[in-house]
Image 1: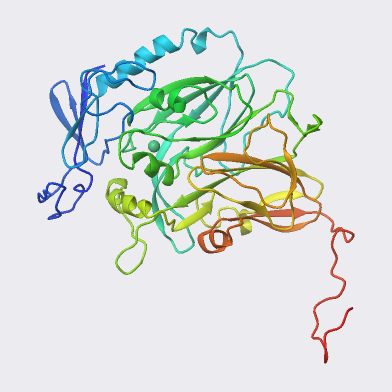
Image 2 (image 1 turned 90 degrees about the vertical axis):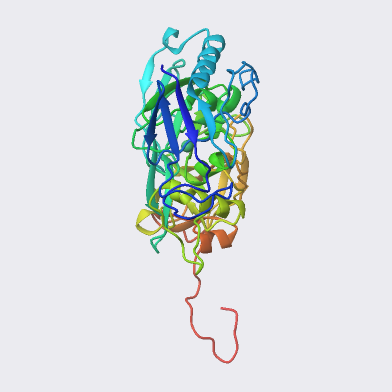
Length: 452
Ligand code: CU1
C-alpha cells in the first residue's frame, strides 16, 4: 500500500465560511477543505472528506508509544491538534494493524474447520430469523455492515439531522448468534462517505472491541472475526478514535446497534427452566443534539462537515433536543406500532449507548428481565420498570395477556412525551374481563359522587 498522508484543517475553520476566523485568528480562505490526501508525493485534494480520528491512545509526536495491542507505533503517529495541521501517516496505521493481526491471530478464520452461515440483516425493530436453542456445534456467522452517512428527518416538524448509520438504519441491525460461534463481520465504507468508520463490539474480547482493527477510510473494507464467549445482549458502535468529539459525534449521529449472543440451549429462568419467545423486537434509544439558530429554530446543513462545529457545541451542553426510539420521533408508534397477539411472548431488546434509560410497558410488565442484559445472570421477574445503563443493552420477556395499544416508554416521561422516547405495541386478541373491566362507563355524577 502506498504511503498516504492525511492533513487535517482546523475544525472550526472549514467549509464555505468566508471571513470566519480559525483558531490562529486567521481569516479562512474562500473554501477550505477538510482533508487532503498525499499519495506518492502528490497532494490529492478530496472535497468534503473529514479526517482527524485515529487510535486515541497512541497519538501525537510520541515515537514508539504503544497502541492498544501493546505494539510500538511508527516514528510519527497521527494526531489532531486544534489550530494547526496534523499529519496522519496511513502506513503506520496499516503496519500496526498488520503486526497486531499476525501476533494476535495465529489461527485465522479461514483455518477454522467450522460451517459458515451468511446472515441477511434486517432493519430494526425487526431481527433476522434465528433459532433460539440449537443442538449443533459452533459456526462462523457472517455479517455485512455498511456505514452510511446521510441526512434524515427525525421528527414530524421536518427537523433534519446529518446522520451516520450502520446499514442505513438507526439503530444498526441486531445480530444474533449463539455462545461459542465466531462472528465474522465485513465492514464496508463506501466511497460516498466522507469519514473513516469502525466498530467496537462490547460483546467481543480484545482491545478496543475490534475498533483498532476495523478503522477504514471511504473506499476500503475490512473483515474482523471474534468469538462469542459471553451470552447476553450487547451494544456495538463506531469508535473512530482520535481526539475531540469524533467518537461521541459518530455515536450521537446514530452509529450503534446490538448483538445478541444466546446460550446454545436457549434462554432460561432462575430455576433453569427454558424460556422462549414468539417475537423479538429491537429498540435502540438514541439522543440527538440538533443545533439551533439565534431564534431557537433547528438548523439544517448541507454536509456533515458543515454540521460538525455547531453539533459539537450542542453535544457539549448534554441537553438532547430529541430522545427517540429507532431513529426518529414516531418510528414505532401509530401505523409503525409493533404487532403482537394475546398469548404471544415478546422479547424486547433495548439499547442506549450514551444515556441511561428506564423502559416501561404501560399496562404490561417485564415477566423476565435481564436488566443488565447478560443471560448468565438469572432474570428478574415481574418488573414494572427496568434500567438500561448508558453503554449497554437489556432484554425483557413479556407475554401479552390483553389486546390493545401498549405504549412502551422511557419512564422519564419528559423524554417520552416531549422528546420522543415512545413506542407502541398493537396487540390483537380477546379481552380478559377477569384481569380488567370497566364496571361502569363514564357518566356525570348527580349531586354527589357515589360508589357504583
Ligand atoms: Cu463512524
